[in-house]
Length: 256
Image (tube, rainbow, N blue to C red; front, side, top):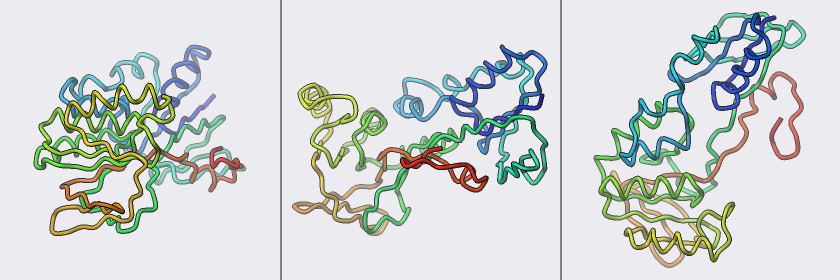
C-alpha cells in the first residue's frame, strides 16, 4: 500500500503517525514545499520574542525515521491525475493507492488600498519565513500589526519584547481576540497590553497604506501612523488550489 500525504503540517504529521500505527507495512511518504518541519504558525512569535529557539519548535527529528516514513522536503505537488492514481511532485510521477490532502491554509490578505509588499509581512506556517523575520526585526523599532487575533497579539508582544518603542495593534472589531473572548474578558488583556506600551486601535477603519521612503504610513480617518513595518495577521483561508485543480469539490465556505 502506497500512501502519500501532501502537506507536513499538524494534520499531515498526525495522519502519518496514525497510519503507521495501524499499518506496519504501508509505504508512507510526506511531501512538503518547505525545507524544514516544525510547529508553526503559533510558535514562531515565541521564538521572535526570545523565550524559545528555533531548535525548540522542530518536530522531533527521529519521529519519521523511527516510523519509516519518507519525507520529501522542498518538493511541491503540482498535480494529481486521479484517474491514473498518481501525483506529480518535483517534476516526478509517483503512483499511489491512497492520497491524503493536508495542505492547510495560507494567509488571508485584506483588501487594503496601497499594499505593495514593501516592509509588509505575514506570519505564515513556513519556518523559513520566521527565520527571515528574526533577521529583519532587529533593524527597526516601530510597527503596525493589523489583526488582533491570537497570532496578532503574540506578534505584538514579541515586537515589544524585542525593544520596539512604538507598536500599534489594529482590528476592525471592538476588542482583541474576538473569536475567543467577549468584550469584558478581552478588556482585561487589553489593559495589560496597554501597560506594556502597546497602542490599541479597535473598530479601526483603515483607508489605505502608503510606502514613503523606507517607511510605511497607515492612514485612518482621523490620524496617520508612521512606522517601519506592517504585519498582516488577518487570518487564513484554505489552501485548496491543488484540490481544485484535481477536480475535488470545494464547499461553500471555500474548503474541501
